[in-house]
Image 1 (cartoon, rainbow, N blue to C red):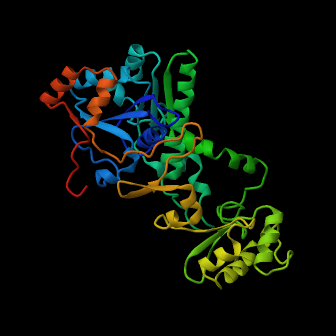
Image 2 (image 1 turned 30 degrees about the horizontal axis):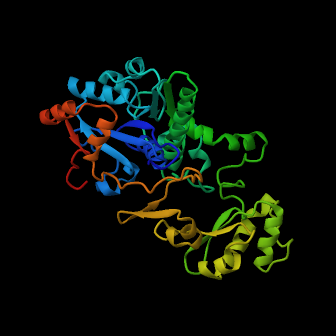
Image 3 (image 1 turned 180 degrees about the horizontal axis):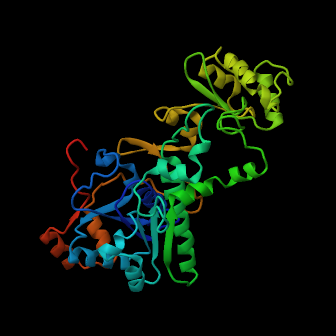
Amino acid sequence: MVKGPLGGMKVVEFAGIGPGPMCGMLLADLGAEVLRLDRLVASGLGVERPPHLDLLNRGKRTVSVDLKSAEGVAFARRVVAASDALIEGFRPGTMERLGLGPEVCLAEHPKLVYGRVTGFGQKGPLAQAAGHDLNYIALSGALHAIGREGVAPTPPLNLVGDFGGGGLMLAFGMLAALWRVQRGRPGQVVDAAMVDGAAALLTSMFGLFGAGAHLGERGTNLLDSGAPHYEVYRCADGEYVSIAPIERKFRVLLLERLGLAPDAIDFDDPSRWREYKARLAAIFATRTRAQWCVLLEGSDACFAPVLSPREAHLHPHNRERETFVEIAGVRQPAPAPRFEGTPAALPRPPHSDDAAAFVQLRRWGIDQEEIDALCASGRLRAGAPPRSKGG
């Protein structure tokens, strides 16, 4: 029996980079059967890594198909017609030119949810422009707000555009559309643009802008490293800790634990924030990170050590919750969120036994003779295309 709340859902993912694979991983983590259709020849897109470390492909099955041939496109259309949802992240118009656009696919399968994720969206003056996460969050206004005072904006990895505003938003939109299908309504296209998604993540900040509570230059406000009580401090051993006691009662507790009087620092006076930061920095520099953990961790001082990805799994809280798991010898984040009634299974490692994709195809109603004929002609094979040397 398939575990997870999405058990029984069939999803076709056209291979890409960033948000599309992230969306497919999220659905696969929660029990969906995700079949990934890749190119016959590696495209060289993205940051190359060994297939077993391409973790966004965990839990999926992969076949490579020649979408430049009529036979390959016909095969892909039959797979799509057997599925509940489709994920694609190509430049607008690419799927239409392949003969796999939403008009064709929805005509053949009216209940299909057709998920599309791009940087700038399916229409607009920049729709056809190339770009990456950093460009999309720059246009949304998010990048400008991230960074310290007096320096250029800081790229926040590719978490805000690719994965938050892109992959997560696409998964959210597709599940909403699939719920509508379950209510007896037709399928539809879900157009997830990373500019739109990153902007949506800024909604609360726009409320602060409107209230006049976050109008200073970058790095001078409460939540962007301007405030001394929402900051990261260096410890005696060179490691870092974070504090975030925004509420007054939590600030009082922090000061008490630091050996200061409750009114020793007036956190509500932005004109003295730099002075107070220097004072707190001097205090935190007197002990190691481990020593500060003994004094502050678990209290309402709103404290946490700054852990590296290599050590986060060792923290007792993460260990007890199994926030990180090991799959085929590779440590990685566990599926999230958790479901009490339909818990998700531990994902399969990426590209493990992709020959089983043919079994999955047959289960979806694809004829074995067609699979054999396409394999014999070289237009279909199990697994992803071979990586280029050094990839």
